[in-house]
Image (cartoon, rainbow, N blue to C red; front, side):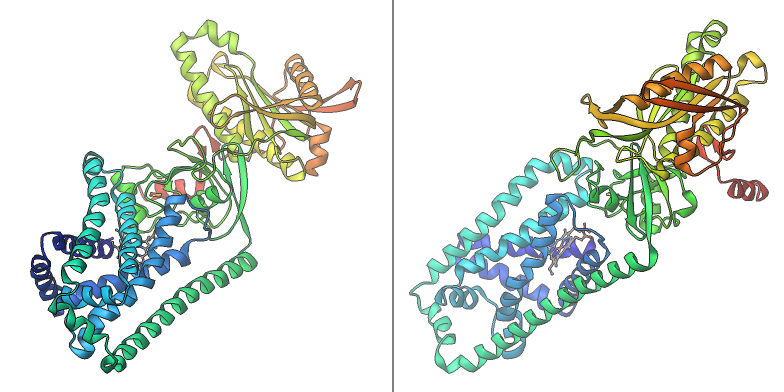
Length: 555
Ligand code: HEM
Ligand code: FES
């Protein structure tokens, strides 16, 4: 950021200097002689050209590191303007600083403006200011946009951002007019005479070489990025990132923010992914072991906001294996697309119901506030377990939760995930019951039902994310299975179709057959989940090894 600020300071001072041309050419010359003293001195040269080099290298790194260019429009504009500006800037720097270093040609306004004016390049020169200035202003906005002082000053800063280039352009024109036809402009005319052709050609040659180098370096950065992407795609495989309601696959090495952007998922990111604003923060609910520890920039920001251990910055976290995450800062819509795609259609889906069977007993034994607290913890724990397994919550009522797996088409993986979720739900309820107490009447009784079948899927309502509803055979059969589980007092009822799709042998203490017009469904009932997941607690999956290590270390 320091390099950007130095360049911004330089450009601002330069524009103010041009604006002095509105007062008089002499006033602008006086300003310029001070600027030349500062920037042509050894420390000034090191500071300015050092900042430009560092900034350029940083920009190349930003290109290389970004796995996708699906960025919000403002970020694209900022980066594009950043790279366009030097094309004009190199020509200008060659005509001023290089001309001074090679031939001792002075960088005063009389010569520079005179030459530009006489050679008809004044339009280009005015255009040169725009990309640099807009890029710098956008950069500052990204860097400081969330600070209180910046927001308060925004109207003033906006006025300056708008007016400074205008005054600067007017100052430049005023100087050109003041010079035109005066003896002072004769020197400029003389520079353009055939006698100086050799000098001009040498400077033009330098300019062309610099531009060629510039384009080659940028091309090399893009090529390096492509090669890296290819290697990552080939060698490292894909990892899955599960959001509330959706699972996406990304090449290993991508950040979670890049995953969100690639799949058009709403995700706040005010600083443009530079680990500064913390708006992209996420809670990692599963797969912490696949998350490399935060680097310094990320750690500094997490410490600043006092974030708990499971919270990470999505723009910095590049998971090495499957993870489940919940974005914490809400944003209404994907940052670069007006409307998110609606998931609707008719296909196979896996339906999971979890019913709180003894809610009525709880209601008579507990105060309403206590029951409300228990219900909140219950629903939170279940939602987390279901989302971590890749399921989407369809609806949540005070005593039942409905989740859907395979919204983009059910298959073997969806059935397995639903069974994983069943195990996780069992872990969550066991943890909740342990916390509630030992008395039988204090224990929560649930029944979990899973069935796979055909249904019409539609998103309804205007909530974000919208509610996903399934209607059809899959849901009707699942509803009959709920009644069956309640009648037989069993905690788990899973249909034959689910076991078949998951490729597992049914686990059961009891079984029943449901006869329906669409066909026969065998239901396997049991008191234990088919795939146990004892590491699941109310607060997500516990890494037992890490917990033991912490206890051992006395932490
Ligand atoms: C060599 C020409 C330049 C190029 C290629 C360039 C490119 C970039 C890029 C790509 C970024 C964003 C980095 C990222 O998102 O990770 C950036 C940030 C920035 N640039 Fe430039 N830039 C150039 C010159 C300038 C100039 C002349 C100014 C001053 C007016 C400037 C001011 C800024 C500022 C203030 C930032 C934000 C700094 C930050 O967020 O860390 N840049 N630049
Ligand atoms: S986008 Fe700002 S910290 Fe990640």
